[in-house]
Length: 294
Image (cartoon, rainbow, N blue to C red; front, side, top):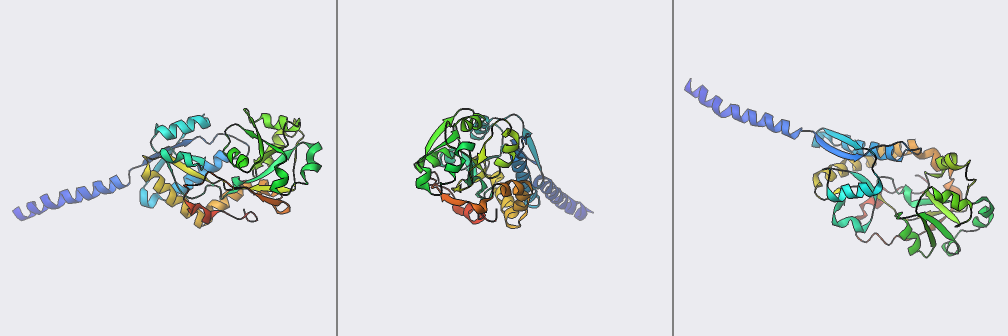
């Protein structure tokens, strides 16, 4: 009897420890992200669901999770939250910049396959014929491109000796292009399709058809440096989604019609250099999709 009691006193705590360890391993991890607010091209919906896909892909290794949406966040507020770590495991998609290295870390797999680095341009109808003569960087450098203030690709455009006119309110770019305040107003390839529907009645803009700008403008999931386990999990899950094709399939389900709308195959590519990639992890380049397959 004493032997049995001794055995139970030794074994039961071990079993309990194992059970508790198992529960601990399956504790729910809480993540925060900007709310997938309504907008016509589904950008935040895409970002939110891609993040969810990455987290779903890693439940076996990391356990369950809860993804909490924070509504009504401006871009400035997102940066403040990420840099201060106000919300632990706050995950945000940013365009890569060397300047983020001090406080932030990122999953080195592209969230958009390089799609935001392809740009086509709105022009005023009376400028269309002249604009369609542009097929080289040297020809483009004779003109001015309109940009919103602090847009991440403004530095790229200027670094390639193209004139830039910055505007405080992004929506003003449509009317200012129509009035000839600058020559080109360039957009990511998923944007003109829905923007023409939304703004076309008020501003009779047309798309230049002669060229597409191409430059490295990778976008990644970022978080504060304190959240290393979180970004490691997201990197693993996103890598799986990229390699099994599910991420691209989802991207195309949202954007294929918009990409077809801009007829990339009929355009000459004008390549621009991005000077803000000195410290980037080049892993992302293995997952950039060629322009004819995106």
